[in-house]
Image (cartoon, rainbow, N blue to C red):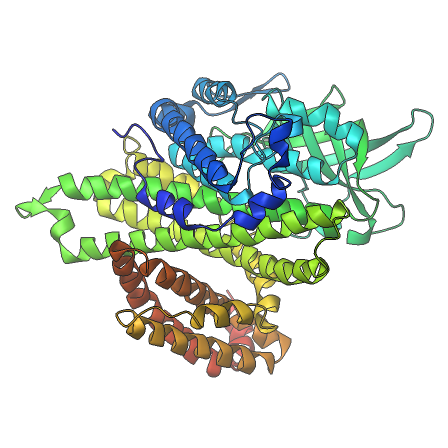
Length: 572
């Protein structure tokens, strides 16, 4: 049994070593001036990177020695509900307490509120480690994005009162968006907010459903604040501190992540505090919150996939059939190599996307503070924002679909015993299934990504990567990727000329192409730094470049035939 989930993962260490966060960290740390008031703040860039490594080592040990050994118990007992209150499983309570004692519950918050001012990309590595240990726990630990939203959009009084409580682990957060009739279509939210003139406060009334960790003390709620509206323009975001006016009606009986309570909540004239401006609830604040949550779910899927892969790898080494371990059988070896390639591709994509998100946040922070040293700041924000907006749905789509594929193969490698509750792989298969559903289904991620792809948002990034000299040994792989990138552009141009119905029908093919090509370029860059990474890149590209060719052919042949046949095919 491993003793540290960070130290046993050479790929996370590789990513931490090679990612360039210099500009992000210098901006976040205010040129490292934070050190003057906060002795634990980093002195310089190297010091910051060392701090992150130590932090991941601490968390890695907790995950391996405290959380993972009791994960089956957390799953078996699950969160329970009685007399209007939710109770975490004993194993979950122990895990949360260990994270609190290590002061890891508010790490993304600035130093002045008791946080560690972590970049998004480092935080997502923490989410991955926790998810590998126990996927349901991630939805308690991983909702630190709630605190970040309050920090970004709340007023100074609210931040000073609420955020230190997050940092001390005294409160947890919940993102309260979904309703019985407003799931993917959040513009249809009907929970009402009205301003109580006599009490001098906003109040909420309505029912929310499928709320992850809905028992949390601090909740950020999307509600309709404008009378007479029925679309997104009438929605605002509110902060509530759970009291007797907030009734938890039940928790859901789910396939997986049993330790995570999914609640139905009723608000009854609940006092609420407006966050930011009215009418910007969905189009600005909730979307910013959801984008952070989508990266967290991507990391959750990655962590579960890593756990499932390791179970399958161990089992394949130990299981003897036909006189030898099954990992020597080509069919099984191919599955394991495919899983490994997909996992490392997803991790590269999450780190790359997180880097752009961090850059965007650091630039926006400079803009909010009125920093005028960089005359190109506004231009940089526009460029970085477009890349972050394009890569985030692509990442959520790829990472969560990847997680499902890996867990499927991990169970297949186990054979019949993998279907039994006594083996962890069965739990991983159940837990990962939610990741490509919640925080926006894969189909919604395709909708979010397709517009950016059609407008060629990723072209500057792809051109930059294609201009790199990868050396003679990697030249053949680069040539293949250049050809695949050209196929992507041909597919985009062809699809742009079609009717909307055809674009929508073939959007998934284009998004798959883009994901494989972006991953391919990232892995090719890794291949210049490590012989092992060169082998991983070769395996990944050998598997996925033919899929790019296939999708390219499908898109070039796109017509209305499937749409015309839809009614006949779907009739029963």
